[in-house]
Length: 276
Image (cartoon, rainbow, N blue to C red):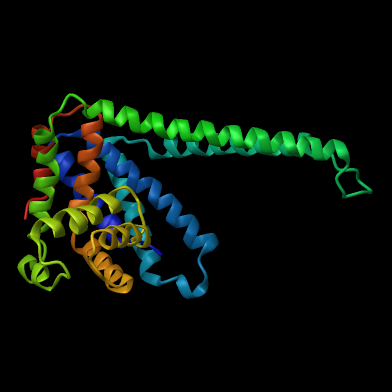
């Protein structure tokens, strides 16, 4: 499924950032659009079924591609060179993978069963795989530690400036008083911390509606609040559409904080993006 909102929101964000002469952040946004465009083109051409293909999707991708071409000519992003480098790296990975597959294939041409030597090699492979998994877990932990280190010099009050600003903006995108009154738990702090913020942060980090709902539902149950998963999914889907700018702002803010920007500067940066 082509996400039209993704393109509209990110292209709008690019316009704002480039006007503010923030070339670095503008490049991040526009290369994200370029990468998504390549993925969607492959999906539309090679993967989507006839029932999933809509004329407006193809038109949207063509329009985005044309706009990127014009931006490339104006700002010299050199998308073609970037794409060639990506393709070269993919070919290297595929070539290495194929080579390893051939080297590891010890089947006899007339016998497709494992012999004892093959079984020993399979055990060795499984042991290696387990080690790799452990290394991957360590890598994830290192990433998390690096992120914590990047924010360690900031006080809780400083860090809170960013989510508080984004939440304040989010509550202007829909009828918040009415939503609060209809929510199963009519407590403003609960709705902000246990619903709105998890939706914004979850979508910003690429979580699916189902993943967000499952985590949220578990929290609700732990705190003693009852809500149907189907109702929760509907609310998350709706708020995901209404809070597109806040989700994008959270992405930009998270990147900036990890790179060492001060929260006050980040708030000023995303304020341009979240203007009514």
